[in-house]
Image (cartoon, rainbow, N blue to C red; front, side):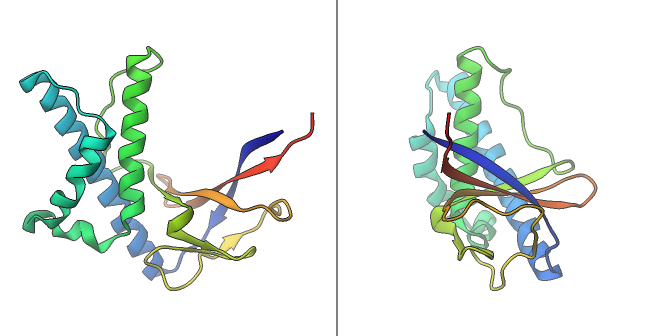
Length: 174
């Protein structure tokens, strides 16, 4: 039976990679907060519900505006994923599993999620979109043989430590 399993590893990025990741974290946070504001305002001012597709269609327009043109400096996949995370938060709220989504803060844990098209995996090294060099991972345990990562999430905690969570699909025996 195929199931998804995540493997978490410590990462020690270079200074250049830290700057790229910081920019990506900030852009993901900005897009998440912007979309939350758009959805909340649309409901309370106009009585309409905006879904993922409407907000996602408005993202290129946001990136083309002069005051938010800096959103184009980072990979677009993590920005789309932050919209998907917001959509999941709203679904959890409407189904009674969570409270209303809140704005992300600058201080605290930061994260960015990359799907298969936004990273390169050659079996031993991981290179994210808009980065030239692979991330220096500390392999605490090996990934299963022949696995192909589907999603990679990079997080930075409050102690300035970086982690990578690699989501794979593997065959698990009963």
